[in-house]
Length: 84
Image (spheres, helix red, strand yellow):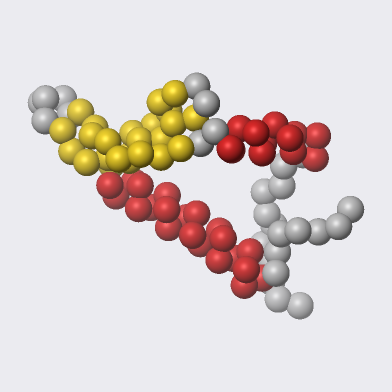
C-alpha cells in the first residue's frame, strides 16, 4: 500500500455548513492599495459576507498551486470519497 499522509478531515456534523459556506466563495481580479497610494494587481477573495482577502499575485499563485496540488493528490492516491 502506498504511503498516505493523514488528511485534515472535517466533522460529519458540519458537512452541510461546510458545503454551504464553500458555495459562497468567489474570486475576482482587483487592485491592492499600497501605502504610497500606488496600486498593484491582486486577486480579491469574497465570501457570502463580502470582501475577505486581497492577495498579491505571488500569493494568489501560491494558493492556486496548493489547491491544484490537493486536487491532484486526491486523484493520484484514490483518496476522497469513502462509504460510511
